[in-house]
Length: 195
Image (tube, rainbow, N blue to C red; front, side, top):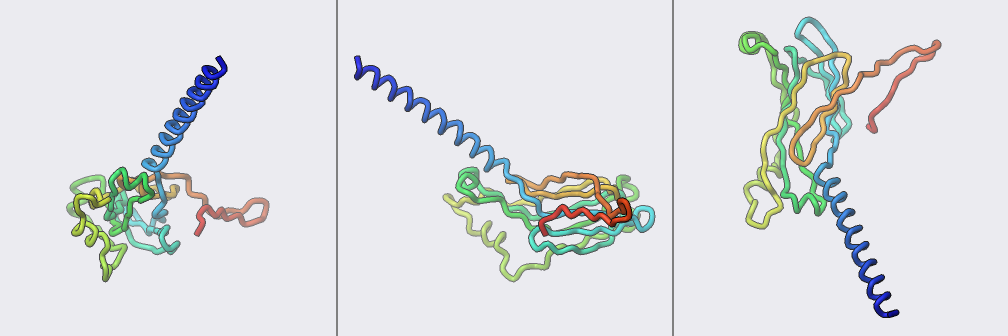
């Protein structure tokens, strides 16, 4: 009888451990595949109708740069390297290189007739690891694909736009822009970035 109880308790403990590991691995898998990382923040100041000054802060070097943008919307284009799912689970995160920022008009007629600019965000690297990786991808390579990814939104000077890299492309989130202000005679400046 005692042996049966020990076997039953051991079996029950084993089942609990297996279920716990399964649940834990499920959470780990979800966490790895749903991973996001900020790559840039954007704010706009209106200079005249359909003409804005963009301040773009890169997460890679915490550097802010300013650009002229024409239109009603902004767009950021990037080159994206996606790993296979098993590589994600081993800790490989997708790689992104922001390549271009531009303005857009909501009207196609305006897009085709009004002034617009596209600005390069990166110089051509002397060693292009993304191209090298795609040229040397083999059967057992962890590389899934290299592709272009873009995000765009309507320009609103009251918003802060945050661009993040996911494991499969870019996403953009927006929040209220917090400008410097005086509170009871004291200048208050909110700093939200780790840069």
